[in-house]
Length: 250
Ligand SMILES: [Zn+2]
Image (tube, rainbow, N blue to C red; front, top):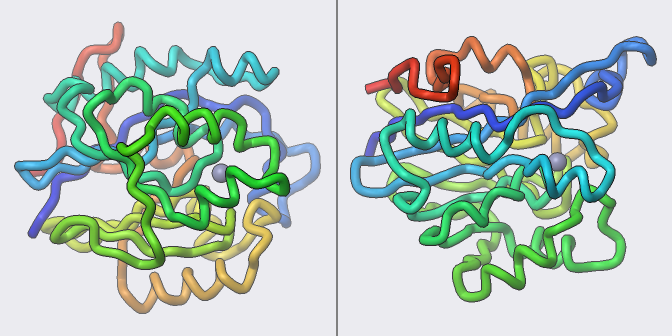
């Protein structure tokens, strides 16, 4: 089964220290990580991978996000040729706020998350970037679909558990005409993280094991926050004013 993928941009996080991601970066170097989501379709199903941050919800926690996040996501979904109500399911790489805050825009979607990640996000030891996660889990109710370990969700679309960034983090492997594409999530935030592992992935052993596995498998790796992903052939660009400007792969 072959899928089409579109990469959507939802907003940027201003001024984070680059050495969070790349330990060899100068302490003064700042970066504006871009928040991407991905739409995948096999012709019958529309799957959204992550839903990005919500500017207003982040502001309520004193976190700044640049961009009109919900407008950008809506425009991106429409540029792909569907409406938010047509999204059948969402797969979360993990439950940090910048990956899941727009689930509310997709009323018909069931939501796949690793069971471990749900438990971690509901516990007392998780970091502050999980704000909104408990509320989301409660709101989803029986639309939430916990996943345990590696799993094929649909023919040609599967998740692999890789606990480098958070305990229940997963990446999504999608079969396309060209080759399998790995929507990495924060286990690979920047292309450079294919070679170097930053403090943002505290479980170095798990991260390294996943990178080795990916190399052997030959997946095309798509990082979660690298501005260079804007140049990717699957990036869905928006025209001035938010309307569709480019096509997706066919
Ligand atoms: Zn994260």
